[in-house]
Image (tube, rainbow, N blue to C red; front, side, top):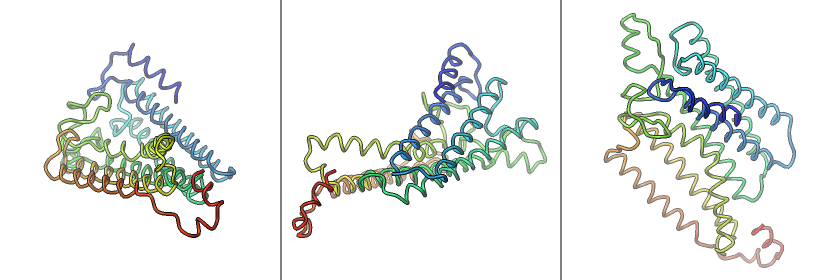
Length: 307
């Protein structure tokens, strides 16, 4: 994937073709970087397990193979100057899109298997264990939400009802066609809903929660309170709640045909409630709990708690 990202970056420079309102090599670049981050994160998570397992090895290899097939089709369609997603214009385009759908389902199932394995063993202290587990769960939800993009749009449904052949099935946008005004870098639509937003939020919780915990642990060198494992665990749970809330909020916003950068009053109200709940949760999480008599009677508990 790192090699494909380099190839796509060069393509961005030397190939001036545009597809659906974006440089034609932009999608391969984004997907290659995303798959690289996904694979590295899963590899790190699996390395936390005390011993490898045959099921975990097969699931990990399945993720790799599914990602390679997906990227092969995306790059191949880019070279042909064709859309890789939602394209059913020709039998070849339809067949490739169906194969991509199968690989993503396979990747999701393999990731689910890995998540089950991560739930069956301790992966470090409790904060680390739950950062990994909850990140994997939210990522699975984000991947699953990608299926919403496969629903035919009202325009596509109207063409089908009229007996006309449609060249596309599904879309990123809600209420607006793909390829309109978009945000820089992400390419998310600025005039209507975009289902890639919750898909992104959910998938990258896989990296966000462990990175958040890493930041907390770095601060623990200067903040004595953060050395308490119970505090770090509560902070991880609060951060997971925030990410789950953002996933739900951005999904609701996109399905209402609303651009991320143009929220209405209900969206802002829900966001304010989420931020307030997170702030309260963070305040409660930072409150240290007095040690119990059991902790005092067993001195060995303290080193384990702050390990």
